[in-house]
Image: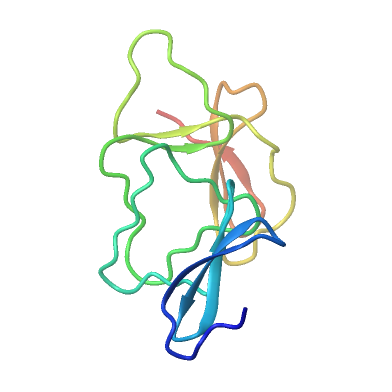
Length: 133
């Protein structure tokens, strides 16, 4: 059944086992048991609430203008591990990863060195050194 040019709403697509949604007769997306897809965009001032978390499985999360903010919690880099006694708040928690090699051109970086015992930095000239207390 073709949608009329004035149709707004939902239609179950049995052939693809999904719930399609239409705006002015054009299918703009669909929902299945595991996905929400289509020509959706959040506009300025929108709030997206995900009560159990969100994952980006392909690509990156990018903030074009403004800040990336963590209001209550931590920024974590790498696999999440629990703290033995008290977990910090408002902290950057880094898991050890691959140490950098070579020049980083006009940038710099901070990372946890192999073994996790030290925090190091790399500057544009490919100089790596420990960050001391």
